[in-house]
Length: 506
Image (cartoon, rainbow, N blue to C red; front, side, top):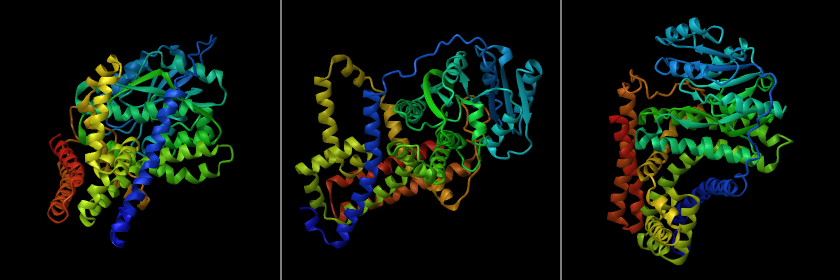
């Protein structure tokens, strides 16, 4: 009924919007499938804690790349010295590219604890983190390599929980441990960032591992078999996420990889929003670079199933949801500008419209709230009411205690990544690798990132400009083509204004 009332330009706009929604639905459906697999298949602990009677523990080298990390490096080294592992079997090799007092702190530790701690200082950041890790490999005696970041704090039993896994499986290339957070409870923002990180680093990796799919390395808190690293030629710096690149190359070479929740290592989430923005840009750019690099080898690989290939590709392609989300906003705005509002509102308030809205809400909630906000909000309200009445009392109580601030923070950050994706994707298209910039730490007293007022102002003004354009479009819709459901257009505008404030005010 809707399509028969439209002229050709209106039909093409609605068709384009439908195509964008369909592409987003692929990612949303994949997430739902993984949720199902997590609940039905992956709760089985296929990898139990192996308490093997190890007669002689193998040598382990701990590799750390640092760059002006003086505020946290002492905490890292102290945690390495506390590892419950024979002292003569573990060495810590720090490759430092710092231009500040970090090297003095490291030299002091080296003087006190050599040969347990060894420091290599580079005058140039050749290859950034990948280059530093390759340098560490040259001077290592370990059969296994534990990679940590400067803010890492591994639990003392980390090595004794991971090394037996390698001894039990000669084809095991690397084990990724479970990340936990030192500063997650500091604010609603850090709680939101921890939730986002857990989605990728814990939920996705544990589910993929349990289902025998390709697993990513998170860049820290993981142990590699040295032979596996040497088999792939070490770390490469042709992408900004050398961790994902190494993980894929190891598994494409036939080595296995697992996510092991029993081995835990603590880290920090960014303490301020602007530092989180800079990290998100790296997390958007890196997977897309790896998609370009590894898509053909994955597709051509003869020993990987079609399902495993699809999952490997879609995990690398996930950052593409952000430009698709931006296109969704643009096409939705055009739809409400050019298609009569009465026609659109009539469709969304029919039975078919409610069904479409419900499906979008299940598969990709953001799209549903932007495109059909009134049916979506009504559906959410009714579902919440029934849930509180019909669900068991303990479940209902947990729902009432849900961290709404953190969940709203997740929505704000996801919406903000629609803008964060622009520069990284343009850089990938241009073929640039980019500079590896470390994330600001909670203990940092210098605040060098926060002093970059010009960059913060630029980021903030991009968001303000986008908000003004959307609000002007909404005003035009109200004047020329009134529609109740067009109110969804102001949601991303309002969220961008919030994120602009957070960036510029810190």
